[in-house]
Length: 480
Image: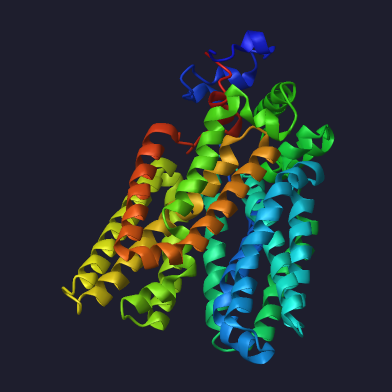
């Protein structure tokens, strides 16, 4: 089958949207109006949205510092605590099945509020738990809230921000996740696990309150036919004296065009026109996890211990270096571009895994045993930094940019399900692989990171400085 022609699909070919996109998917300057300045409302709305990211970071990092206290106070076995730790991923998987539908049906703002209500219930269940059942229920609720937030937050930010700062603001999602992990880890050494769970409620309640003061996504408003609210919201976001007529027309034409093609059903994703976007979104999520990302988050302590290095020093160092590295990613996303950062990140991750495998190989061969601990420590730090600079956050940034509004809900569910299921597979299989061969495990990760470089170079478009409408039209093959 050849690529669909616009005339055959009944697509309008003369809209403002399509005039600025060339046949090869590149964009011309004529399509882009002057980018409006960043308004205080855009900044405030973004900060409110990333409160959800902070909550996700707190949930991710909670099980590590709370382990000894919970096991001692409630008498949990190692197996019971392992269930408590891993059930977060089950909640995320369940949420991935509905987060896109919720975002489309309820709107971005209500969906964020729902995720935080669920997360608040989860934290309270953990804080006042008397047995393992209530702990597991709370952890499952945290996973549900986190699975919803991990999709809706970057989508909302991408849809309200001007193109010149869209990447940086969306990358704040990963930065706040890192901040949440680090804060909960350090507070866990000071306060009890129950107090730590109550602290986790604070950003949930803060976001629920502040959501009343931020606008809905203008792109969702035009999708559901709320024209007056759409223009008023876009004007508030861009500034009182800014001419929004060009941007409003482009968004409206684009949305109406895509809405005529299909509704947001999962089967509609598998039309030829959406194949490129789908490969990009799902591919980046799978490669991110199979490149070892969740392994270093979940099993860093055991990796350090296997190399005879202090796990406490190692894990604290990881928590510290990830914050400035992710901050650097926020700064560079709209300057260097997404593609270069993804390739540099994947190269650093791959090199780190290769040397890490070599270190364990030399340890197995009884060579350089005194050097192995330092080499493992350095490699994991380099991996943490390079992962935070690119693959950690930019996969979600690009996911929020490439899918058209009419399939964004179902696409979001599929992409986040791919991410959570890949996370579970890698996390579950790592211990078995590590026992089989520590060097082989990290060399497999290194090969997958190398594959990620090729995948990015060949298939991932540069989205820096491009309007969402223009980018998505080119990926969906609107034009010849």
